Length: 197
Length: 197
DNA sequence: GTCTATAGGGCGATAGAC
DNA sequence: GTCTATCGCCCTATAGAC
Image (cartoon, rainbow over all chains, first blue to last red; front, side):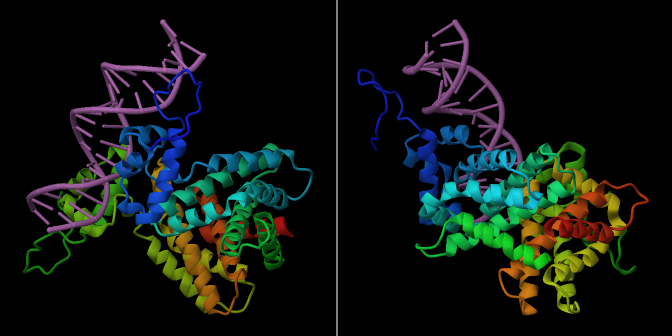
């Protein structure tokens, strides 16, 4: 129950720090152990050592605890699109996602467990799809900021998200010695190009 | 409160028929009038003249009442893919969706209102995204049944769904004299092809 | 049809950090 | 003093169980 307290030695922290992180970990663990819908928010809060009410202050709902990292990915993608050199909109968007996704490489076991949990529950899949759609519109906005007109911006961004999804699936399923996720995404893009040629 | 009763003249219907249809209409109306989250299932049931319990027997949850037509669209897409003559997987899937979607042409005002309601609420967007994803996997299955291998089948199906989404947005936003949805979808496919060329 | 557990929002009180 | 994170108890509506 006791956790590492990061505070000055002459003061005792009133609460253990990082309630949000503990809640996110507890949620993933419990969803994996007994399934999403047989886990109550009270269960999660108890394991994290906080009250139920605190959970809802940290996360908008029970699903959101699994999607804490999605903002970081999206910000990296938007930045990568802004920083990209010239190229076709699809190439720019797909490469931006491929590079941003390398932040997942070092946490593949976590990503695999999380993917398993999401695959087992429809309402978690819905949330994942919403996050992907949000990533797509953010990427489209970033392309428009570079002067790409519609419908090219939307199509390129959505296509990049599609190749990310396919590349992600491949990376998740591959064995330990497999290459990084960026290569999986690039391979999916190459496949798509040969399909539409 | 009284509706047209389609029954034999010598019998009095015990319940008004088509509770499911009335619930779907009532749900859309109320979501449009006062917003999704300020509408309770009890409100919908009352307007449809049934009990709350009947709503949940007809629909799995409060969102599902807006998605009654999605099965018909999916079945038509799968059938069209099975019936298609030879061509590239992307062309087959996109054309299959374009033709199936013509069933929406005669109900454009309904589709516009529905799209407005969905755009106003995140949890309805999630459900819409799940329906699109389900359509994508069904289309991919249909392509595989034709002998298309992966990842081509998945990529082609997902790409077709993307051009459908973009075409649908265009068709929804266009004025009354605009061409049908199939042409909007075909135009989106053409744009995508020039983008990836 | 009735009953009930749980999600999730509102609000005020508390007690730390600064 | 302000700001912010927590708690606790109120409530309603969803959705599943019986």
